[in-house]
Amino acid sequence: MNPRITLATAARILRQLRADHRTIAMMLVVPCVLLGLLAWIFDGTPVFDRIGAALLGVFPFVVMFIVTSVATLRERTSGTLERLLTTPLGKGDFMLGYALAFGLMAVIQALVATGFAVWVCDLDVAGPTWLLVVIAVCDALLGTALGLLVSGFASTEFQAVQFMPALVLPQFLLCGLLVPRDALPSILSTVSDYLPLSYAVDAMRTIASVPEPLGDVTSDIGVIVGAIALALALGSLTLRRRTP
Amino acid sequence: MMKSQQEGAATDAIVVEHLVVRRGGRDVLPDLRVTVPAGQVVGLLGPSGGGKSTLMRAIVGVQQVESGTVTVLDLPAGHPDLRHRVGYVTQSPSIYADLSVRHNLTYFAQVLGAPRDAVDRAIDAVDLASHADATVATLSGGQRSRASLAAALVGDPEVLVLDEPTVGLDPVLRRDLWSLFRRLAHDEGRTLLVSSHVMDEATRCDRLLLLREGEILSDSTLPELLERTGAPDAEQAFLHLVDRAAAGAPTSAPTSPSTSAPTTGDRS
Image (spheres, rainbow over the protein chains, first blue to last red):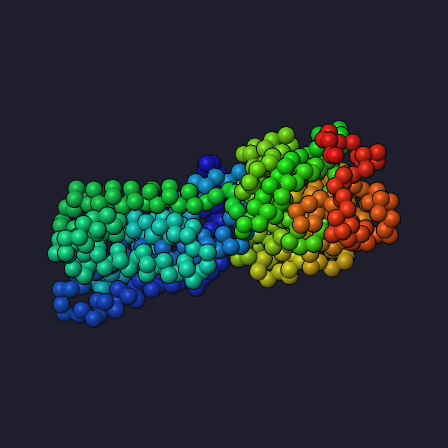
């Protein structure tokens, strides 16, 4: 691995993204529209304050998962990945390049979505708002890392897109957003302990309800960062210099 | 940009021995032996599906091989030290369609650790200066494949492996590219292995490898090939060799040793 190549890769991915105005607009606007819709549906009830923060963690996860898995699949099918793997570029340079580029996009997306939720939709958060942004960025990176991983198992765009419902929706169902995790049937509750999105939603709920949440949230962040590292490491195993 | 390989005519840049590659349950390359002398333009000709791309992939180290050895610049193919010494251009242009030519080349230059001016030199070499800032997606097929070639040139490689670089190009561009290939080899001492299924491009190569169904039918210069087969041109010579192979006559002994360029390997 080489920092020059990693940064060049991240810069190249951002440049590609910058040429695609519609994707950038959708990455920033869609979470706001959904949050706004949700706040409107539950207008006058306490529900939005209860789940709004948790959803701030779910949107960047889903969006980055889709964008990354398709972008990486494009590299595989266009031959650019094969070409890059004949150059001094290391697998880690490739993985981290994507993580850095989409991580930066995630920061922007999290700032916009959190700002919209707090100031426009009046989301009531007991803890510090900046911590919401931190968790949202971690979730986005988790989505990126998982997207990189699954793109290794998809050979067409159709497959890549379907990994979203296959891998993301179960996590969404079990993360405690619909039914609190400790109220789930015991097997499902145990399964949810192994899903990284559960920790993201736990952290967001803690921030929303506890004025000084930093201590409680640190361990959740630790689990999410661990899951990111694991997914990136497993993902780099799917990048093979020699193929059949 | 001169390479210190002027003495290289006597050495082989690429040595392939007993290479076996199996793809989809079929031996694409059953047992291949071939050498590519340094500092020359070597044409790899033959029908599609004959194993040209597979051989090239093995040489650049991206092909899983069953057995045998592939040595490039005295190192095993795919060795980390070769990654900035060997340039590879795939058959379909492998560059980013949503970036401009210049941005593509700038990225590959950074990955390959090439100096900044390498980008402009590569753009000039493939005659794309007028389209340097155009997005690749807006370019014609020929322009795209030249941009893809430039992305390999930018790293100043000693060995260039080019898979059908002239396919779909008009005659003028093909002539220009072949002059570029010859310049890269003869003036700058690089080794080029160029595949093509257009037999009339044979006249542009220093040596010809005829590959059919994973076997080398001939490895010689064009005049030697014509003399040996009595054919008027490369295409006729190739057909002659194919017919002989189909009839079961011995087609191995690819070179006539008396006339072949000096190489280290024993080719019998």
